[in-house]
Image (tube, rainbow, N blue to C red; front, side, top):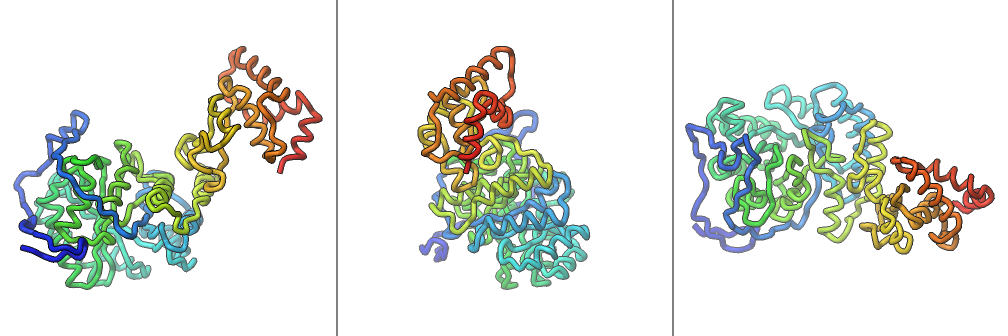
Amino acid sequence: MIKFSNQDNLLVERTWKPQLQDNINPELFRDFFDYESIPKIAFNFRQTPLDMPENIWITDTTFRDGQQSTSPFTAKQIVDLYKLMHRLGGKKGIVRQSEFFLYTEKDRQAVRDCMELGYEFPEITSWIRASEKDFELVKEMNIKETGILVSCSDYHIFKKMNLTRKQALNKYLGVVKMALDRGIVPRCHFEDITRADFYGFVVPFAIELMKLSKQAGIPIKIRACDTLGYGVGFPGVAMPRSVQGIVSGLKYYAEVPSEWLEWHGHNDFYKVVTNADTAWLYGCSSVNCSLLGIGERTGNCPLEAMAIEYCQFKGTTDGMDLSVITEIADYFEKEIDYVIPPRTPFVGRSFNTTRAGVHADGLLKDQEIYNIFDTEKILGKPPLVSIDSHSGLAGVAYWINGYYDLDDADKIDKKDPLCIKIKEIIDNLYAQGRTTVMGDDELDGLVAQIDPKRHKALLLLAK
């Protein structure tokens, strides 16, 4: 059959349409996942063309999946973080949606408080169980879209729910109809998609969803959930682990529009950011993230990482205020007592801090030599040095110039007698067995001890 494709603006030959394969026994892909060894990555060498949508964006699950991995947020903390995400995403809504639980009065109050702010973005959505009561709650809260769990691997269908594929399909379609009957946009969470029979269950299910959507005149979104982080974005990688195979397959075989496709990944194999990139590159408009990557086990895709990735792909911030990333990190540490590993990109205290003397020497001459971009301008975080036995004279000079925030005309050179004297003291301390980094207060005290008059002058020169 030849059919015109609105996605490609070409006539496309569609000779095969996947149909539900109602297997008696579960397909567990034991060649890939034997459980007693590391999962295997296989290749079939099938190439998928790049298909970046015109519009891409970020959605948030901090208050749903993210909150399941930390101490519960207070309603005020949720509202404060929601405000920060609004500022980060900008007027174009690059941070497009944020999903909330509705189960407790605290959760519902947080939703009401966020709604009262009147922001267009992030749009507030929910996540519910498949029950009449939960659907009525979504309607009562005046929420237009809700997430619904529809597990799609045989691990879940057979082992967890004790159903056949046909029974699961019918159950899921019934739940989706409940949402459509109430005028609610259903977002179907295809749990464990990277261990699912893509052509035997996933695509046939998606085809049925698109039929329902057409009948109801309401979008039905699909969130492809890489629940255990098995997704792989390498060219030519075999299903079911192929991120591009999943995204392009849903577009091609089930004709799901890019705008209705969303990728939700986990970081079990350190691939969460590259997999989200791959989903964008091959036709998924939306990637689902959480602030700082908090979430189940190894966490979700960090929202701040994808904000930076967006800029790399688009060559523009599109109105995002990236300095808010630093405010978000500060809020988590100061208000929530959340510990961010110091070397975490973009948000860790030491992500642009060096201890190496050769790097400090480069920073002293020109920050661009060793800094990834103008972190002070973009994130409000200037590159720093930590002083220890490896920092050298350049590290000391750079610390003095940065700590006292000196103008270019007042900055000192590594050959300055003050730097030489400080380094002598530091070398002696480490020769005696010290192992810890020198603190700012400690170094400031050394300057005052060595040259009290100059110390006062430096304080006066500080901006």
